[in-house]
Image 1 (tube, helix red, strand yellow):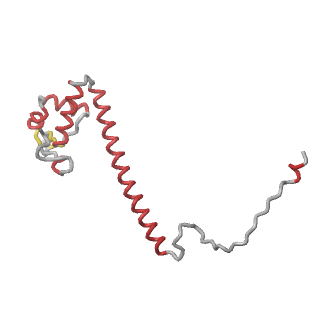
Image 2: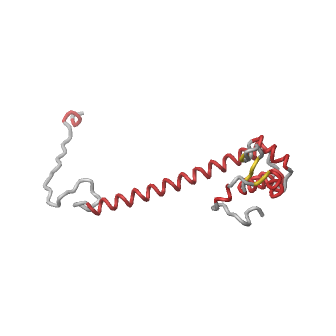
Length: 147
């Protein structure tokens, strides 16, 4: 398996260091298939200074998923491209949600810190006294009362 030595959290997982022949062998494909998938935009290999394609372990795992979807599930390449795009979008949104949750936790912690420093540690926006003598009087409008 391609991920025996590196996992998704490891920086080496995304390093574009594998030559096309190695990546093709790891993915169980012919190098020409990898070139076709590159042209179709299913996988985006890096480029070596001489122009040769370089793949990462992540790319190899993606190629295996493309092969599985195509051979086992019968999905055509256009469908696979759409699935991959949606999965990438989902990953980005999940990361954005995680970032926002972290920011929200930080904001709540800051609010709690500020409230603890306040002369009025209650959560009221305006401090009130318990001896208020305010009275509200309501009267029905005379214009409406004379139907």
